[in-house]
Image (cartoon, rainbow, N blue to C red):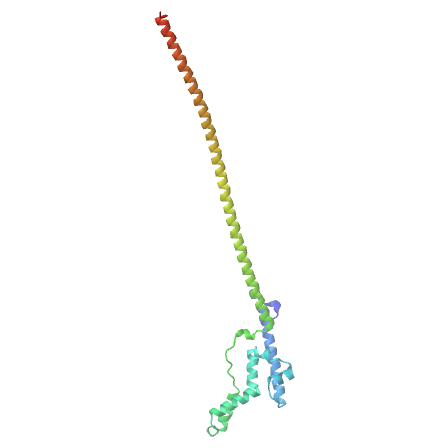
Length: 220
C-alpha cells in the first residue's frame, strides 16, 4: 500500500507507514552489522556498529525493536549480565543443562518502558511541533476573530442605542418647541381678550354714565 492509497479519514497514515519503514530499515541494518561483527569475532559496541554500518547510536536508541536487539548482542551488556548472573548463582549448583539455560537467559533483555515519542524520527517530531503550533495559532486567530466580532456587535448595539436616544431627544425637543409656541400663542390670545374685555368694560361704564345723565337731566 502506497501513501496515495491512504484513507481520507486518516491523513497521517502515509507518514506512519513511512516511519514504520524507516524503523524496519534501521532494524535490518543493525542486524546485518551485528552479524558481520560477530562473524568477524569483533565486539559489538556503538563504535563498531557505526564503523560497519554508519548507524548512529541515537538512530536505534529511539527505535524500540532495534534498541532491544542492540541490548541483546552488546558485548559490554552481555558481560555485565554474565557477571551479575555469576554473583547470584554458585558454580556448583548448576549442571551443564542449567548452565546453558542460564546463559540463554542472560541474553534475554527486559526493556524498561520508554516514552513513545522517542520512537519518532526527528522529521516527524518537527512536523508534529509545526502542527501543534499551527493549531495554537489557528486557535488564537479564532479567539481574536470571536473577540473582534463581539466587540463589533457591542459597538453596533451601542450605536443603535445612541441613535434611538438621539431620535427620541430630537422628538422631545420638537414637541417642547411646539408646546412652547402654542403656549406663547395662547398668551397672546389671552392678552388680546383681556384688552377687549377692558375696552368693553370701559364702554359699558361710559354707556351707564350717559344713561344716568339722560334720566336725571342736567343738574343745576
